[in-house]
Image 1: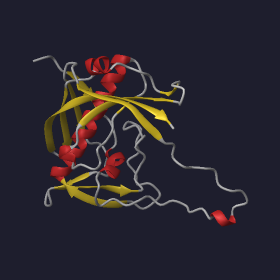
Image 2 (image 1 turned 45 degrees about the horizontal axis):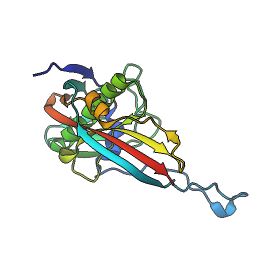
Image 3 (image 1 turned 90 degrees about the horizontal axis):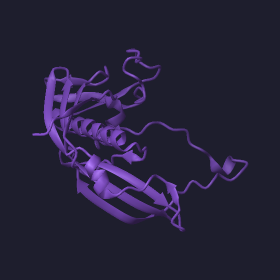
Image 4 (image 1 turned 60 degrees about the vertical axis):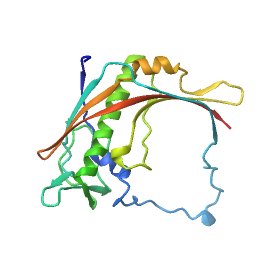
Length: 221
């Protein structure tokens, strides 16, 4: 077996509450009364894209390891229910550094919900594997446009781990965003798999996620 590099993932679980698909609530937002505005609102319609190329290939680089012990105090395992209680909305920012995080309630109410441990463990394993794979590919290729799509339409246990590099061109074929790469080069830099270890309040899951490399080229219409 090839050797495995280890990645320690330090992300906040609250950031992924929106990916759970049940029990979450939408954050509050201020409404805008267009009729009372002095000027018409800016056009905020989403740009349209046409996919010109979409290629996938299994990762071929050596497998890696990723470990995480949950540090967020707003995520709690409930042994009597075999479930996880977490912040559904109005939680702390996902961008905070665990070393700088003040373990104090924010000056607003927190809304909690629960999901079964058997579902939560797959959600977190997917997150950890995806982040570790993106970091490995970014370091190997030295490019910034590396991401990971999340298949929210699937149950967490069935969601694939995908590392995507995407480029957007205009009608003349000039690059608007991203950097072109050959799918073989991307696959060569993508880990074959990620061995994940995740721990929450004494509950531990160990699993292996295979990784797929994806290159997508889109044209801005």
